[in-house]
Image (cartoon, rainbow, N blue to C red):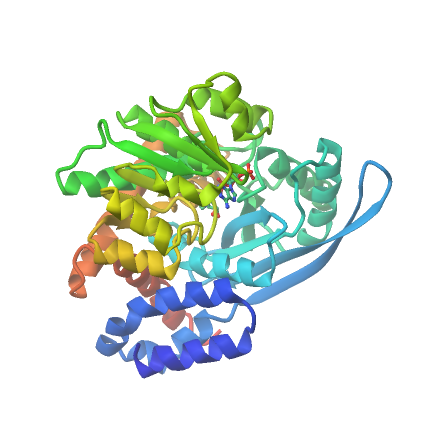
Length: 446
Ligand code: NDP
């Protein structure tokens, strides 16, 4: 690293103690940026890195609510409004017991560059709570969401900050959040949240967007290298929103998904996963993936999630959570002949796993580029809301596809320009950085 990036990284670690995931995300971006600072001292002169790592605003708040037994509960809510150089803050809300300020900052920091890559006018932000929706009744989730939004509503707006879903926040939660926002503000501000229901301002394809987008960019990268997805064996971790729709699209393109997981364990079905059954278990019944065995006793279930990467496959799509693939897992995939790894989740590979994947010349698409389809389609939802319009599935899907192809083209071109051909990590980080940094310079020291 250059003295500039080293100096700022040291400052980040000192100023934000104990936030390991945030340090990891910053370091991963900084590692790509030295060639930019060598060529363009203007960014250092304008203190761009020092400003970029510091969120414009961080809000931490109490979320009190009452459970079904009448007990008072208190969770902690977060919204980090990270960077608005390109547009209103935009990024999801995560409800999971592991959520803390460091996790929200890592996600918000990554979101700045991801959103820039989409080419849409959106800044970066992220939020959430340590609330665990698992095992809660609908009424409890509703009361929690209403309390969360009672405070959050002071800080967001369609031109200010536009949250969406992430882990633990799907259509149900967005509905409760939107209802409470509307009640408090006394106005129907459709563009304040994305991922809404289709009858009340949502966009077709938003549900599918992150998973489909991941497969579109993977397809483009492989096509560029004369490889088809047809008949490839695919392992996908997770069975949530991203995993399910990545599985759906890659199956449509002729590949065979043989394993999926949830936070309790993984499922291996050699002849191919029955995705409709997974949808029924996870989306409709909010059940456990293990229940799949009741219909398919010939499938195998193992309760050690990370062992999913020991299954021999051609394509691995980590779509569950951060740091879910370590060096041992990556090595197993490599030993078994994997050709491509695409990150559906945010930061699912540890730095050691990334190094192995790059050193072994796998086709590797980092999350910033690979999972940008979700937020890109959220921006398309905002466009429709602003126009009081709704577009067809095909129209939105075509737009999503062209955005993903553009991201691949931009990141590849920038990587080549900076002498790192085929390195999409560097290409995505630099391409995203340049857009944000140039806007920050244009807008002065704010
Ligand atoms: P969901 O809550 O819908 O699904 C998460 C899935 O991952 C669940 O199946 C969950 O299991 C599983 N899971 C969690 N931890 C583990 C683990 N350690 N091992 C195996 N499985 C695990 O979340 P999303 O699909 O929305 O998000 C997944 C990832 O994608 C996150 O990193 C998120 O930040 C990222 N992402 C999401 C976007 C979106 O549009 N939704 C956009 C861009 C990125 P269980 O059912 O047991 O909880």
